[in-house]
Length: 181
Image (cartoon, rainbow, N blue to C red; front, side):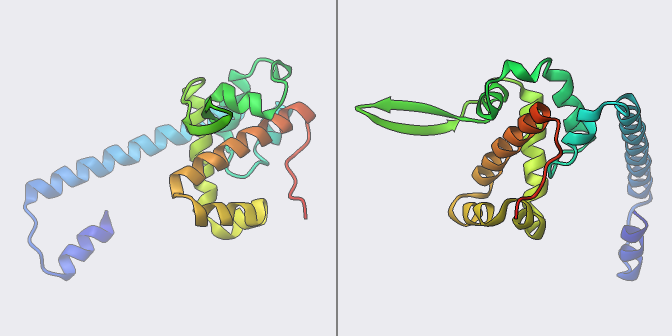
């Protein structure tokens, strides 16, 4: 905010005093919200500090404390899912399938299932996608090629599906995510 006021002053732009007061109020509110978010994040970490799976899930790229804790609270028993695809389907990250005349067609994602987890996995995938170097390090040419062939949002959902499958594997095996060379 100080940078904005400095920028306006450098260009000698007159700003009405009421607008300045309103902007300051908005900045105070923004700072208050950030403090509350930080406090909640600390509570989340404190609550799960002794949970091994909480720590292991955070080894998956893009998955932080919020996604890890939501994943653990939503999944009562990881053995309820036969494989990672079933877990991703339960979240709602797999495409609808329509078949007629022996020709299967994949449609958009189902958006059924756990909305909160799906949203968190999509945000995790988006965080990974913005960092090309780390995305390539973790997922190799698969992700780079996918980004080249498909639209950004389609690639994000495909990566979210992959992250959900990896998260299921981490919860099932109790082993941290490792980059395979």
